Amino acid sequence: MSSLFDRIGGQVAVDTAVEIFYRKVLSDDRINGFFDGVDMEQQVNKQKGFLTMAFGGPNNYTSKDMRDGHKHLVARGLNDSHVDAVIELLGNTLQELEVATEDIQSVADIANSVRDDILNR
Amino acid sequence: MTHIIFNDKHIDLEEQQTVLSALLEQGHQIPNSCRAGVCQTCMMQALEGNVPAKAQEGLKDTLKAQGYFLACSCMPQEPLHVRTVDVNMLRSPATVIEHELFAEGVLHLRLKPSEAFDYRAGQYITLWKDSVLGRNYSLASVVELDDSIALHIRRIPDGVISNWLHDEIKVGDTVDIQAATGNCFYLPGSPEQNMLLAGTGTGLAPLIGIARDALRQGHEGDIHLLHGARQIDDLYLHDTLMNMAQEHPQFHYHANVLQAENITPPISKNPLMQQISEVAAEPADWRFYLCGDAPIVNTMKRNLFIAGASMTNIYSDPFVSANDV
Image (cartoon, rainbow over the protein chains, first blue to last red):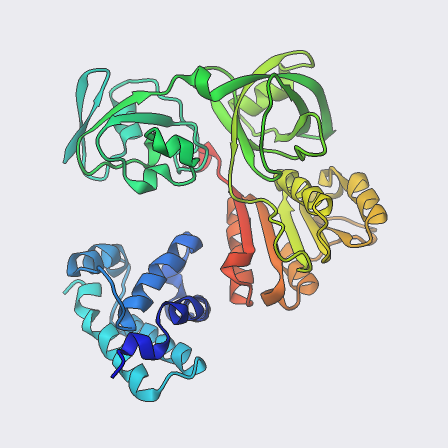
């Protein structure tokens, strides 16, 4: 049976999804404040990394990367509700791309698995 | 914690400290300007050790290969042996052949480089006042069309270099310039794509270069240029752009001013962002060039992306000034 990453569409799917996903993130008042003043090109690259990981693809993320990368946001109030919002937008993105419901659930599970690292607890 | 070696001396770096900050702290005179990895004024060379990739972003491959890096963006993870660059190698003299005000506070400077000076319209150069003081200015000329390079210099209150260029430099003087850099320029793929070029103030300099370059390369889609300014007097290329629009049916000029009375098209009081969304109502298919004050450029970029423009179709050059950092 093919892997989750392959079923979703691999690197091509990441490249397609990243702009749809990032556009949703920047349009969502629950979380877009965390993205004020960030370099958009760099952010797109970071989000490609995140999507690759969440789609079950090859990645080199470590728990330390996740913690270091979000520490300043936790200090600004990042909490579970914001992680929920991101996972919801990720799901909406995949629905738009007509990914199967079970696969969307698997992606949400992977994203959830790094929740404690992101929130530094 | 790690350290650098400079002039045979061992200098410790704090956690997250840049090479530039450590050297300045020790009293060394290192040329620098934006301190944001943009202007390339603080270029140095590594003799030994690993340069982090971030410190070489935007440098030409030939420079990267020789270990050149930007001291302001360099936070080494391990010891690094560095030296200042022989400035004469990177700079070349140019003669001032035109020095005239376009409008209050905006100087039109034309320079004749002493040797072949290659660039792409829309890129920027560093102009040096002396061995350590330099600033970036966007090129308003097109190398294939113009035999001199043109810069639009806005006078910055208390700006050492802009005031020097406005008040002291005159035709016949020589100034030092340094290689063109930047990624905001025209590429010939997709000639049928509509393009929107928007900028405030002297953000117009790279945009007019990019527009002329696109026309030169046979761009087929519409080219809309939007110039945002405070008042009518700040629309310093109004006549030139009106003439360009007359001459090229595909070229359209829009001017947006904050304060004005009795205005007629193409001048309007629409906010720049509103004008952009009216011109490019379906931004997903358009290509964008955004130049000028950084906060405005970044806002335009974000709004266009949210409205459906692809990041790969947005080229931007937010002007970063030393005062901002």
